[in-house]
Image 1 (tube, rainbow, N blue to C red):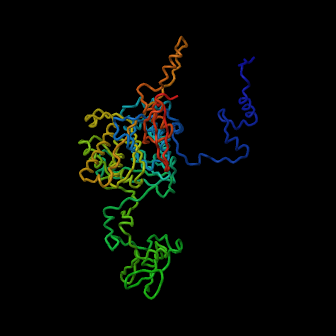
Image 2: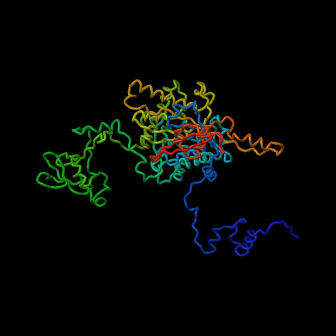
Image 3: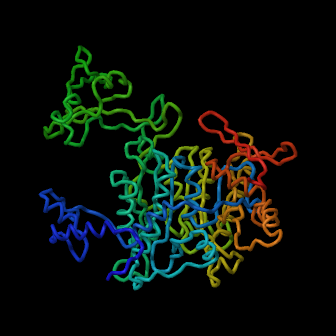
Amino acid sequence: MDKLDGLTPDLVATRIDELKTVFPEVFKEGKVDFNAFQSLLGESIEDSNKNYSFTWFGKTDAEKLAQKRSTGTLRPSMKESVNFDTTQNLYIEGDNLEVLKLLSGSYMDRVKMIYIDPPYNTGHDFIYNDNFADSIENYKKIIGEASKSNPETAGRYHTNWLNMMYPRLKLARVLLKEEGVIFISIDDNEVHNLRKVCDEVFGEENFIAQIVVQINPRGRHLDRYVAKTHEYVVVYCKSYESANAMIGVPKEGKMIDEYNCEDELGKYRPLGLRNRNQSFNPTTRPTLYYPLYVNSKNHKVSSNKDDSYTDEVWPDTPDGIKTCWTWASKKVDNENDLIIAEKTGDEWRIFRKDYLLGDDGKAATTLIKSLWTENEMNNDHGRKVIKELFGTSIMDFPKSVDLIKRAITAGTKKDSIILDFFSGSATTAHAVLQLNEEDNGNRQFIMVQLPEACDENSEEYKVGYKNICEIGKERIRRAGMRIKEEYKQQKISGERAIPDLGFKVFKLDTSNLRKWDNSFTCEGDSIKSRVLDYYDNLMPGRTQLDMVYEIMIKCRRPLTSPIKEIEVNGVTAHIVSHSGGGECHHTRILSACRIT
């Protein structure tokens, strides 16, 4: 006799047995093959295996990690900050995965540009081993650790790197504005995987470029077959349709030399009006194929023939191939002062004047190129800048400030927010400060860096820096002091305001609120004493300001919002202001040390 287990009948098991009786062929290894079942019922099945997909071990868990809500907070460090009360810049010390989650409320859709220089996965630069159970506790454990090894013999060499990058890129996209753009430095080790994962996160239609940067003109002497001289900067935008995702950069060098003509309006260069691309022709652009007429006496041009404008010119090549003009006839008439003709032999050539300075006085711009070979882009230049600031070369391979400045110039406006969540020695912050000084900009930076320990044998450790965050914060201070000194020497502070050279420091930590401890017995007054003990429910060592910022994060207020302390009926309160959309919003946080 079967034993009764005290449970109601297992209806699922009963139905499975009935299904096995009717359709035994749809079972594979004891499980229902639903594709086989649908096929048996005469339904068309699309073979999903034929579709392209990019996957790896742990991808699902990595995606869940991005979705998992953080229990942490960011605590202000006044003593490490510069101009804490007024600055709009942020330096955040902590695991970037958790920090990105905490920023996702306050800075969602607000960041114009992200630049990151993540670990290249070369085997000895890996410390971001995420713990899927408790990210904050995992962060506490790895504080002060040096980079770990991720050798190719580990078996999941690329998988470990992808599981680290995937959730961070997912969160990064949330922070980007619709016209936002991300620049990612990388080398040959993972560029192929980076492109694939970015295609998934940002959409392959939002790929902009894979820029080649010459970072070592001499080539790496340890390479086996080819001495590599370059790395890459992979660029994606949030929306390719946005007209402001990328903007032109000022022309310089030989491009300026092209403006070798001058009239009463200034320097200009003559640009041929005929479109040299033969795919643009009377068939593809019929409205741009028409004759122009030249006045042979003054070389002026018109779209209409009369007694003065007699010499007919068509947009054809010297060997008779029909192309077209770059301007419509109406534009030629409306901007006729910009059109000139020159005669070469028996042929007239039509040009338009392209001026160096626009009507607003700004210099002409150009699209950034996909090959950066200038000396100021290489690592030697990056080391030189560090040495000038610190008096010694304390970083082995710092990125060039000019490299990041070029990216910022192409990817931002003068009042944009720039985020770097692998900030290292804070080169991006340095670049923002320099660029603001040069063009009177008001860009703001957010730097995020894990307090990774410096190797005890390294130069930086020998001169007193225990972790990379100490280097980054000190670099921003020194760069700011140098800019301030330059203003004094040039005596220009009266002509325009010194840019924001400060930064607020925050550190990732557990919540400021104490967790209720129910591990006690109900004896005597223990319950009452326990409740009274929790009347002040802040963690030991935490302050009112710590709690204020935690509430700001939960209320989605930017960390740079002004805070004013007031007294209300004998209770300390804080007024948090946040300007946005033309209005000033206030949040009153009462009894910050006794939240109930």
